[in-house]
Image (cartoon, rainbow, N blue to C red):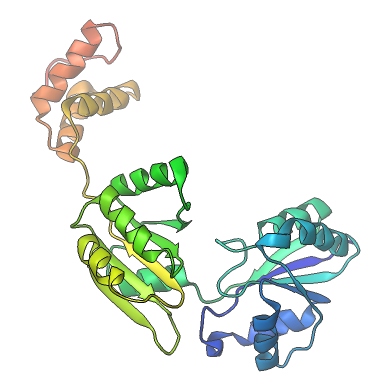
Amino acid sequence: MPGTLILCAGPIGNLGDAAPRLGEALASADVVYAEDTRRAAVLLGRLGVSVPTRSYFVGNEAERAVEIGERLAAGETVAVLTDAGTPAIADPGLSAVRAAVEAGAVVTGVPGPSAVTLALAVSGLPSDRFAFEGFLPRKGAKRTRRLQGLGAEERTTVLFSAPGRLVADLSDLLGAAGPDRPVVVCRELTKLHEEVWRGTLAEAAASWEAREVRGEVTVVLGGAEARPAGIEEAVAMAASLIDQGVPASKAAASVAATTGVARRSIYDGVVRRRSDGRGAAGDGGAG
């Protein structure tokens, strides 16, 4: 009978944040695959757990995933422990989950502290909807496209950054999103030298360039202001509603209330679409 894979979220800094259930889960495992075996040894010692450990990091993840799959197929309980945060979330773990699924093993986990949600909570930026980007690509077209997307992103975005890359990341975000976008830089969350810096991208780029950056860094970027809808976009929105059976006048009124575009302009645009043969029926006037 296949075994069980336990994804174990490790403390993001302060070992006191480790929940009792984390110790119980690790103690129940036949083996612990850890992103950093030295740091894992410290945590296991703190929790009073003695279990064999194996390394599992980006450099050997593919090889170890095969190993994990074999152990799970043999009925073992395998724990995956990342250095800080949750396995598979911008950390090794995805390959282990896929191996477990292929082996028909149970996949479960122990939730824990998250730099993503903590940084978002303390940032003071809107958090009802947000995006998580992990680390930005280091260079090339992929980085350029990602930055362009962030420049237009209306949701608050959480990113990770390495100490040696923070200045470049902030500078490129400044170029993509503009000088006035709010940003919060969180450094060493939950640790002794925790710091939460707030300002604009222009201020951040200047301030952090003059400093030596140390520790784990999480960046929270405010969203772009919503772009006002143009007449063509408003007409398309109304046409979509009409296709769903909404009368043209009501569709025009609804879209006008949402976008701020004049109702008459929307209705006239819908009529033009119909006369051009692009669909959308009328119902006797915009009122």
